[in-house]
Length: 303
Image (cartoon, rainbow, N blue to C red; front, side, top):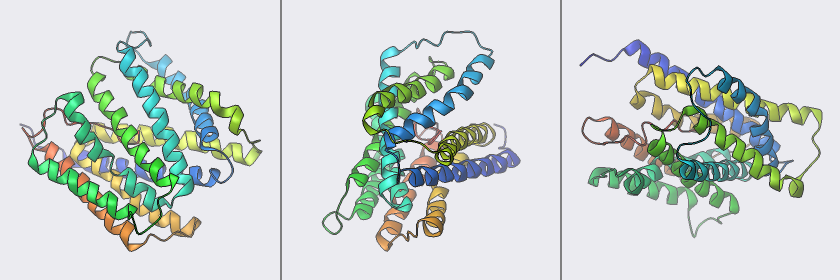
């Protein structure tokens, strides 16, 4: 067994940190635009403006093959759930404080662990089940049922975490037989078609500066996705994956600086529990012989 390349791990970790910073900036712009536009309109234009770059990527792909999916049912299901996940996340960013939204979205690896049992045949033993239960306790600490009023934004964040987990688990199930181009293209087309169908009901005129912000969402998302992919190529997944939790620091920083949001003690404690649970699941999967599929490690989170 060859020793890990520590320089590659360091560079991969730094690239992953940079990707998470760009994703967080992306979310700040979403939150800003959500004060003017419906999440439907924001998702539609972010997908539409991403399409040219994805088209160039498809044309430059050297491998032969069709863009027609080999697993049309699974790809169609993933397209729908990915659209729901994106729409729900954008709504949550527009209605909840950034730190609170991230704390709930950080539950995604916990849901992936549960879904990997029926969809991947993964065996989850007692220690990971304890981590799952701890993560759910963390979510309850953030939500504070009975003490704080739960809003549609909280529900949207929970739906986004669950749908993102389902989307990533489907990728793990069909990823070996589907071309990456197919898995990249169809969710974007799904956002364009599904959000486009609803767009006439929520349309708001777009001014020049606002269109620039919409374009920035697409650019930042694409650059962050590329950096995330490079990070996973350079570093071990157990090194790159935990970097997503750095977004809570960006949330606190941006929230205070731009939106005058200051997370309360319950949000910080709940986020800490959820992050600890997610880190344990990631590190547990990285141990040889523990997991047959590595569903959390091999998911690229936001990208």
